[in-house]
Amino acid sequence: MAEMRIEPAHTREMYDENQKKIRSLRLRLAAIALVGVVVIVAVLIWRSPTGMDRSREKPAQFAVTAVTLLFGGACLFYRGMRLAPLTAYARYLRELQSGLTREVEGVVVRFAGETSFREGLYFYQLVLNVGDLREEKDERFFYWDALLPRPQLEPGMHVSAKAHGNDLL
Image 1 (tube, rainbow, N blue to C red):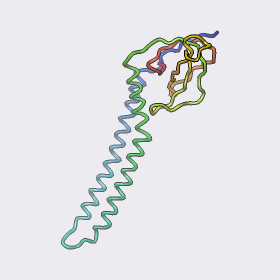
Image 2 (image 1 turned 90 degrees about the vertical axis):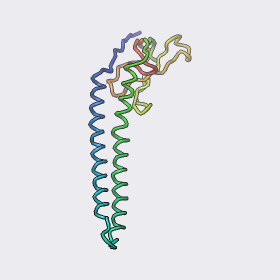
Image 3 (image 1 turned 45 degrees about the horizontal axis):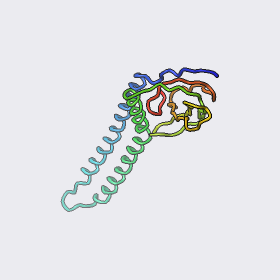
Image 4 (image 1 turned 180 degrees about the vertical axis):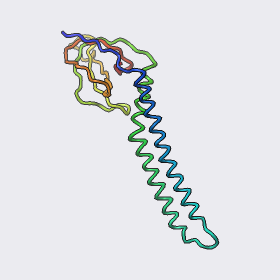
C-alpha cells in the first residue's frame, strides 16, 4: 500500500494576495458607484425648475430611474460575481489560520475528479477511511481547495495530513 504525506499548502502570501485583490475590486466598485451618484446629481441639477417651466421633470425622472437601475445593477452584479468569491476565500483562509487543527491518517476511498461547491468556494471531495476498511461508518469526508494543485491520490493509498474541520490544510 502506497503512503503519502500531504504538506500544508495555504500560505500567508496567498491571504495577502487575496486581500490585495479585494481592495482593488472594492476601489473599482466605489468608482462605479461614484460615477452613478455624480450622474444622478447632475440630472437633478439639470431638472431644477426655474419658475413655472416643468418641461424637464419627466425626462429627469426617467433618467434618474434609468441611471439608478443601470449603475445599481452593475454594482450588484460586480459585487456578486467578482467580489463575493474573493471575500469568501479570504474568510476561508482566515479560518484556516486560526482554530484547531488535527492530524488525520487514513486510507483513500475516493478522491473526486470534479469539484463541488461549498460555502461559496470550489473543492475536491476526498473520502478517507480512518478505521476498519470494511466499515462504512469509518469513512470521513474532507475537502481539498480547488485553487491549489490537486495531489495525485489513488484509492488504497495511506494518507496523513492536517485538517481544520473538514478542510485539508
